[in-house]
Image (cartoon, rainbow, N blue to C red; front, side, top):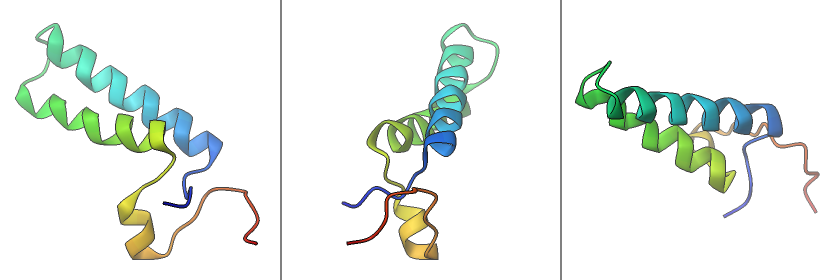
Length: 64
């Protein structure tokens, strides 16, 4: 897996995912909030499978 998630994208994904999960745990939003696992995971792994399918790369690492 090559990293395809840049730093700003990574931070946004981690914050969004954590907020969704937290809101679900405290009962402010419904079960759909568990979808926050997806952005949290992709942010932590610096890899988004959907970006690969769409040919998007926000990572500033230069290809070798």
